[in-house]
Length: 197
Image: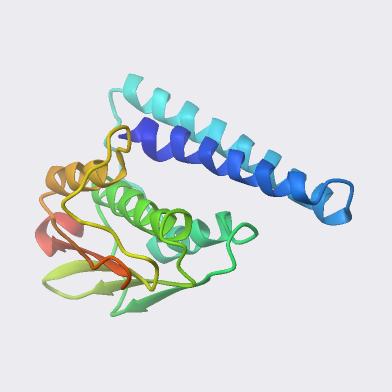
């Protein structure tokens, strides 16, 4: 799952960048896009090294104090020059510190949902809502794209399967709602006892 969510997704993004760059070769925009692609390549390599290091560390379950909303905003920024879609992250309730495992998996699930909306559904609008309540953490990623068959898992595509596995591992409920031609919504709910620390 981590190889898919960091290395494979990251390098897929790089391929898309260079395809767009090819169309703008020789312009100032091309040079700027190349710089962004190279910066992203560095980030992907760092992420890959961190994942390998985490496997080797005995203390891999340390607490992550990451800012969930900021992490979700970064997902949109990562693809902002490739997709014209509007992307908004909204928060309801007061942010609560999350356990490390929940934080990592929620970000990975949201990232997959957002990238699917941009890359496969050709959405023009994507929203990510983070809702903190006393009883649970809820994440909703919605788009107005082409939709998909939620029961169909294409051979060689691991994104939806990985989202379901991650949700199971953290004891969360994951609902995928979509109608072909009418957008989609991914809803993740994690009980407070598991989500918050």
